[in-house]
Every structure is written in C-alpha cells, then in structure tokens.
Length: 256
Image 1 (cartoon, helix red, strand yellow):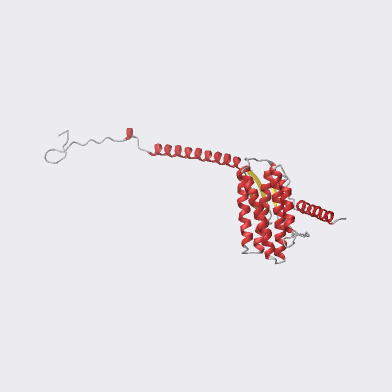
Image 2 (cartoon, helix red, strand yellow; image 1 turned 45 degrees about the horizontal axis):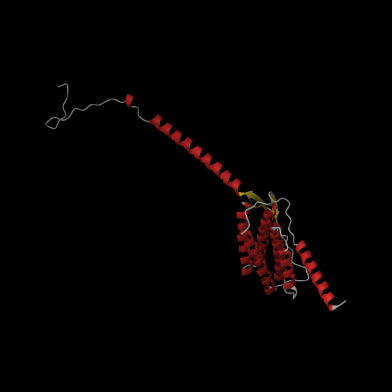
C-alpha cells in the first residue's frame, strides 16, 4: 500500500470517527410540541480527538463539511446544534482535567457554531416546522448543561458568555417558530418544559382582558344603582320659601 493510499484511508477513518461522534451526540426529543423533560445528560467526551489533539482542526473541518452538504435547512440546524453539544461534552472533560486552554478552545467553537446558526436563522422565513422546534428545544437543553457547568466552575467567563449566547439564540428561534419554551422546576429538581404557541398565549390574554372589562362594567352599573337608591327624591322634599329682605334688612312675611 502506497503512502497516498494510507493517507486516504486515514482521512476516511477520521471522517467516520467524526460522524460517529456526531451521531453519539444526537439529541432526540419524543414530542416536539408537547411536554418534555430537560436533563443534563451530556457526558464528558471520551473520544480520541479532543481539543488538545493535533487532529482536532481536521475533525472540525469534517463536521463543517458535513453541514455544508446538508441541503435541508432544518436538518442543517440540527446537525449544527448536535456538533455544538459535542463541544459541550469536550468542555466538560477538559474542565474536569483542569485543561483550561483546551476547554476555552472548545467553548469558542461552541459559540462560533451558535453564531453561524443565528445568522442562517435570520434569513430564513418564519416557520413552526417540527425540525425548527426540535432545534429550539436542543438550545434550551444546552442552557441547562451550561448552567450546571457554571455552578461547577463559578466565575468562568467563557461559560457565562456561552450561556448568554444560547439564550439569545433561543429567542431568535422563538421569533421564527412563534413558540416559547416554558420551564417548570419540580420538587425533585426535574425541569419540565412545554412548547407553547405565542398566538395561543395572546388569545388567552385577550380573552382574560375582555372578562376583566365585563366585570368592570358590571361593577360600574352596581355603583350607579347604589347611588340612585341612596339619593334624595325631590318629590319628598319640603319646599321652603323665603321672602326677600325689606328695606330695613329684615326678612318680611307675606301674611303680614
């Protein structure tokens, strides 16, 4: 086997490793429009090519190439966010090993992936397609992972910056899908999330406002009725007639 064939075989093997890593990082959510549980299930990266590897740049290049050959926009978003999840896995391992430089490199690539997704999202027409909702939910899960990492590594500016960027990206998805991910933390610290259409919330608010206005009208009518019942009736009042004062400044009497 020539050196060229060895080189090609090595590249193909590396490409397969990259695809396998992305597949392992794939996040699946059963119901994109119903309730789902947000959990921190990102394990520390245990693959052979981490941020400290000399082949790491080639690994990232293969991931980017895979995304660029994905024609469907929503599928591309999901691939980008799954690759971003892989960066979080790498960050977790490097922080556990106290490799701050390698962790920072993975964080920078995570933010770059979010920025790329946001730029592509801005030129995309609004849609509530299941694929976009799924991508939006992935971002919500990333926030939980980043929040946990921040608790474990307080004061880490890179983690805080990445968390803020994930919040911004979720807002951009919300504008496109017109769907908000509402979170409720239960007593067992489990986070239950639900995708709620913004149009439904607006309609509900409008209905509630109409009910409040109806109540105010009824209250106004009751107040007016109360004033009418408690007021004086002119027919029952005694008429008192005073004669004008005479020239001496004393009141006169008509009968005198």
